[in-house]
Image 1 (cartoon, rainbow, N blue to C red):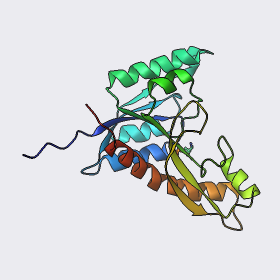
Image 2: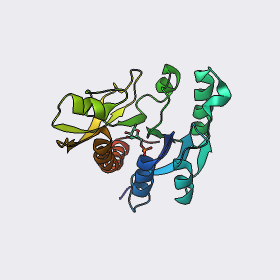
Image 3: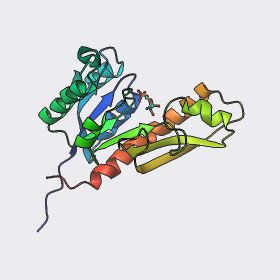
Amino acid sequence: MTSSPPRPTRVAVLISGAGSNMAALIDAAQKPGAPFEVALVISNKPTAGGLAIAQAKGVQTLVVNHRLHGENREAHERAIDAALMEHRIDVVALAGYMRLLTPFLVRLWAARMINIHPSLLPKYPGLDTHARAIAAGDAEAGCTVHLVTEGVDEGPVLDHETVPVLPMDTPESLAQRVLVAEHKLYPRALADFCRGLQLS
Ligand code: GRF
């Protein structure tokens, strides 16, 4: 007897800006046989360019504006979690989501929330990763997909891609090269992660 294939994992992508990684995830999800579907895109900023891209690709979007909650980070995260539950989301993929999460949301989504970071973690958590790699004289840079835990950019590494640092590189030119690698890495890492999940 053959068993039916597992259903695609329902992924929500959280963005704050251009959404090029989000676009790469949606494109990968829309290929036949993909183990995940992008069921929802949430932005904390109404002006995020990625919102229109997601809509053009037929993906539902939602703005959960952090400014409506003032200093109350948990209230903002409660609103995000409510949307995730309403859309029956299995996995959250942060893709250029520029708000630090509190332990409240991180604990609710423990082992089901991943992030992409533009450095070879554990090197260079936080901001300005490309300038720091150049200043250190690194021969290689890259990007990492990791599980989200309470420490910033500290969770277990799932996968990474490396790129060379070239002699004439500026932070901008290196960022561009790393971003191309991110678009290759994130769909692969998310697909592998989703294949390893036991969904009910
Ligand atoms: C990417 O470099 C990502 O690694 C970082 O923010 C950038 C977002 O770019 N966290 P985009 O919005 O996916 O184009």
